[in-house]
Length: 455
Image (cartoon, rainbow, N blue to C red; front, side):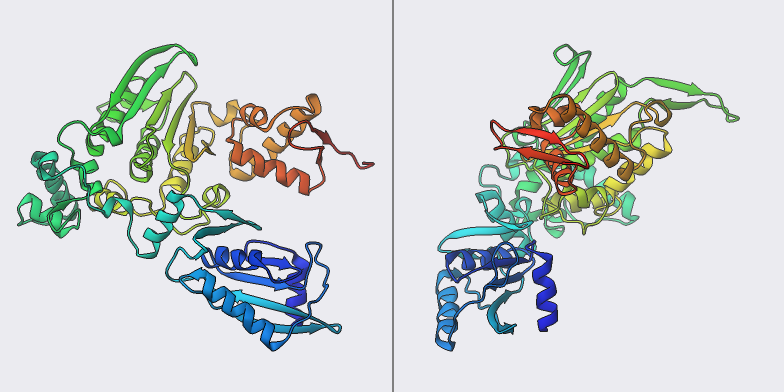
C-alpha cells in the first residue's frame, strides 16, 4: 500500500474493513478479531474518528509489544501485518489482517464480528453458524441425540428413492438406509437432524407450521397445523393454500379450459420451499402462513444467513449460502429446487409475468417474512414494479409520515410502509445521510424533522 492509497482510505472514513484509533488499546485487538471473523480489514492507529491524522509515538519495541499482545490474547492466534507510514512528518501505524480461515476467532473468550463500521458481540447461534461455515458443514448434518432410526419412516425413504430415480433417470440398487448413508443423510448409520426432519415417521415438533385463512386480523375461518416431515408438509401446505385461492377458467383453443389462480402457484411453491429449507429449526418458534383477502404472509424463524443483507438479497448481489446444507441437497437431488440461490429472483420474475405487484421481503427479530400481494400492477401505481421504484416510493411515504407526526416511532413507520424494522432503519439512515431528515434529540424523547434547503 502506498502513502497515496492510505490517504485515500482515510478520506473515505471508517467502514466494514477500516477503523481509526488514536492509540493502541484492547479496542484495537477487538476490531482485528472482528475483521478476522468477517472479510479482513485494517486498523489505522494515529487517526481520530473525524479522519484527522494525529500521529503516534512509536519504537520498534513498542510495535513488537503490540504484536505479541495480539498473539497472546487471541484464539486462534492472529498475527497482523504491520506497516508504518510518515505523512507530512507524522507517523501512523496500519495493522492489517485477512479473513481467518478457521473461525470464529476470539479475544479473551469474546467473539466479535464486523457489521458495517462497528463491532458486534456474537451470540451462541452466530458463533456456532460461523464455525459450521468454516468446516463446510451445517447443523442438519450432525447426529440427532434425541431420535434414532426407528423414528423415521422407511416407506417415506422408499418414496424419496423413487423420486430420485425418476429425476436422475437412474436405478438405485441400495437398501433404503444404505442409500441414505451414501447421500450422507445418515452418518455412519446414525440419524442426523436433517434426516429426522426429512423422513420423520410420526410427530415432528421441530418442523411445526401453522396456516390460517383470515377474514380480518382476528377472525380465522379455516386453519391447519402441521408437525410432520417437511416433504409431506410441502404437499399439504400447497393443497391448503390452493383451496383458498380464487380460480378463473380461461377458454383457449385447447380441448380443456385453462385454470388461472389469483396468485401464481409456482411463486407460492417457491416461497414455501424456501421456508422449509432455510428455516432455523433450532428456533423454538414455528413457521406461520396467513392468507388474507388481498395478500398472503409467510413468516419463518431465522434471519438471513451467512452475513447476507436484505439489500444484497433484493439486488440479487450475493453468493448462495445455505443454513441447512443437507436439507437443501436432499431437495435438489429430487428436483424440488433447480439450483442454489436462484429462488428469490424467480419469485420476482413469476409475479411480474403474472401481472402482480412485486412481493415484500422483511427481516424482523431474527425472522424472515415474505408478503405476496393479489394487486395487479396497474391497480396500485404507487407500488413498485421493481426495487428501485419501491425505494423511491417508500422514501416519499416516510417523509410524508414524519411531516404529519414528528414523534412517530420507527415501528409505526415500518407498519405504515409495510416493511420490517430493519429495512425501515436502513431507509431512515439514507434519508439522514442525504440531509432530507434530521433526528433532534435522543432516540427516546426526541423527534424527527424534515429539512428544507434553508435548514
